[in-house]
Length: 393
View 1 (cartoon, helix red, strand yellow):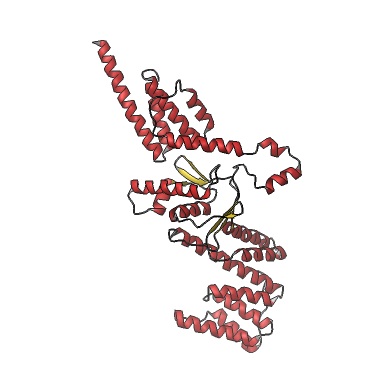
View 2: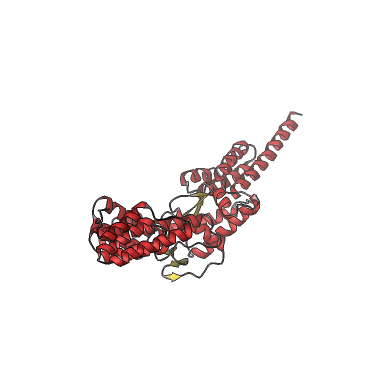
């Protein structure tokens, strides 16, 4: 009788462990890797003495999850607990196999640290020129400030028809060194879809993106603990980020009163801005916000550069800056003011007065407003032949 009770108890534990293991697999398939590992650890603890086969399966799956999360020490501990290769089928095997293949390829293509650390300077420069990186991935050049384009290792990739996949890539690229949780991406790209359908669509988009971007070895997209991110070591050039870096550098020079370097760097930023940040049909609304933010920085760069040219009494390039600014935002009364000053100090009084009149007509027609008092006072000063010079920005 006692033996029967023990056997029944063991069978109850076996059933509970099997149910928990399936629950852990479901969590893993949904991207909840931490939760899945916790459940599998519980299964292993319940069964390591009573059901070795189930314990081996749980340890095997926990090890794969830790490996997928790049937690190598913990993965090694779990794999060390596996006594025999699990006989039962694992629903995690497809992703585990992919993780193993990617890891092996990364290790095979990664230059050793010692090879680069102790190489002569010329050798290190040569390695850099051949786009070697810790990721082992070829260089990507992404054009966002014009119709979207991706160039991988000097080869222009064809237009990708998987619009959601590209939207996913561009969103992660705009937050280059930040991870996005899968729930964030589901809400962003499939806000009205049921959870199950949206999750499936995300997996399809990720798969499509990897097929489009990735070379035969390695991947630009990483997934761990329910989060996606661009590989932090991947050599990726993004003209939108290059533009912002130029703006940041120019601002530092300006604040440091180094107007020569600020002028040069603002010029570089403006040259980099070849067009507005591209907004695709699947990008709204986050990409629209990105487009507006970068456009505001572009207009600010034109304004700052125009001010510097005025201080240098280089009125022709200053006029060009403010004309380009007003082509994008004709209601900027401060820009109308600056353009009027440029015309006046360049000896073009009539054009300065005409600029005020164009501004007044535009504001009255479109907004039902008259020019701000500062603009009116400047107009009157120019009419009288008196106009204050520009001040240092």
